[in-house]
Length: 341
Image (cartoon, rainbow, N blue to C red; front, side, top):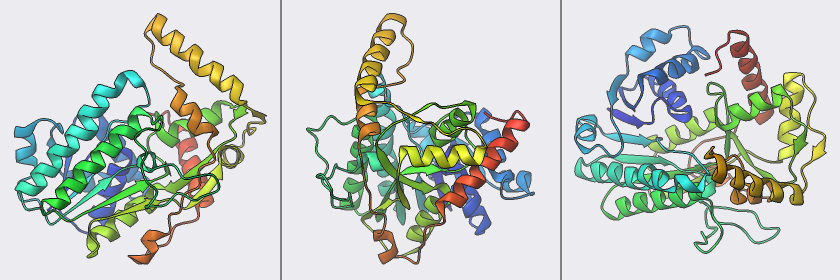
C-alpha cells in the first residue's frame, strides 16, 4: 500500500487521483476534514466518479509530529510520497516551519526506516537549491550556500532534504524532486492559484525577475515514474519553462481576458514596500505580505534546468501555456460557482 502525506494539499490531491487511476491501494494523511472538499473538487476536474474515488482512499487523521498516529498510518505501507509541508516566507513563522518541515520530515524518515519502506519520494522545492553565479543555469549540482540571505521557507526545506539524505545512509531508497512554481487548478487561496485570482481582479505591476515553472500534473507524472523506476538516491529539478514574471502574468491575464500588468515595480519601490510591511506587522501584528527575501526573489533572474529527469525515466514536460489556459478556465468556472476556497 502507498502512503501519501499532505493528501488534501495541492500536489497531494492531484497525486492521489493519479495513483487511484493507476489502480493502486492508497492511504492518505489529513489534518482537517474541511479540506476534503478541495480533494473532491480537484478530482471533479478529471473524473465524474468523484465520490467512489474519494471513498476508495484509506484516510488517516494524523500530524507529522504525532508519533502514535503515524504508527497507525504506516501499517502495511511499502511506498511513501511525502508531500506535506508548511509554506510561509514570514520570518516569525520559522519555528512552525521548522517543526513541520524539518522535524516532521525527520519523523517520516524514521518511520520509513523502522518499517523497511521500499522507497520514499520527497517533494521539496527549487527554494532549496543553491544560487548560480551570474549567467549560469541552476541545476542539481548547484551548491546550497548557508551564508546567503535565504528565506525561512528555503532553510527548512533544505533542512528537510538533509533528513531524507540521512535516511538514505540508513538504508532507505529515496528520490527528491525540486519543482519550480507549480501551475494547476484546485486551490485558489495560495500558491499559483492565488496569483491567478489576483490577476483576474486586476494587477497593475510586474517585477523584473524570472523563475522556473512546471505544471502540477507534470510533477505528479514525474514522481510516479521515479517511484516506479529503479532510480534511487537522486534529486531532480522539475521545471519546464523559465519565464519572466511579466511573461507569466501576461499569459494568465490574456487567458482570463483582463488587462495584463503594464508598470514595472522598481527595485527601490519594492525595498520601501517590504520595510513598510515589516513596520505594519510590528505595529498591528498583521501577517507579513512582503519580505526582504521575497523581494530579492522577485528581482532575481533565475534560470533552472529541468532536463536531468529525462536521462533517468521516459518523461516529457507538457505545454505550459496549455496548462495555464486550462487552469484559468477552471478558475473562471469555479468563480462562477462561487467555489474558490
